[in-house]
Image 1 (cartoon, rainbow, N blue to C red):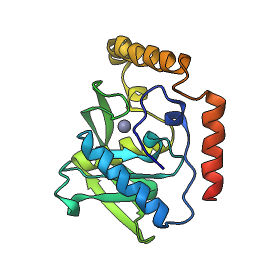
Image 2: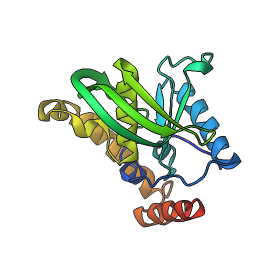
Image 3: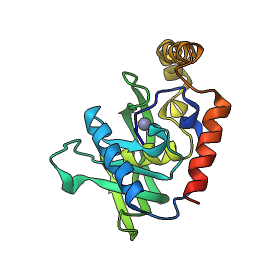
Image 4: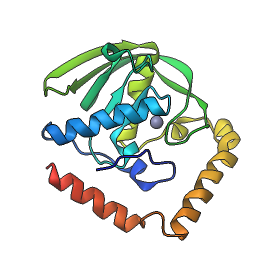
Length: 195
Ligand code: ZN
């Protein structure tokens, strides 16, 4: 399966992902490809629905350094357990390249997830890593950082988002992109393969 990063307003970005039931070689290969794509695009996190997959997992490396494999983390079926404090910071997204805005997040969080070996782990995170994990967990619930902007910042970004919407529509008009119904059917099929 050839994976690529999809852009706003692709409907898979609004898909609420179901938990993954097993970790196998195929899933590990998808995850390895997700790390490659994340580094290729200078990202620090990438969720499965950003590569058009309906699986509840994301990859992250808060250093963004492909050489720093110790900082690489895979979060499978992540659940945010607790949060403390508030912090505002600029966010961007590989699915909305070039668009940034300030987002309020929890300053500290506790997250539980499975790793690549299928073992559970708990992370107590703050600063950038806490922000990445909240941004990526949002993706798995079909949410984007632009949904969390103040109305004034949303208005600021309206023009940029419209350009993405026009581009998406014109690609669809010339048959480069499947219809909403075709995308939904494919996601159901992929989910069933791993149910
Ligand atoms: Zn994102």
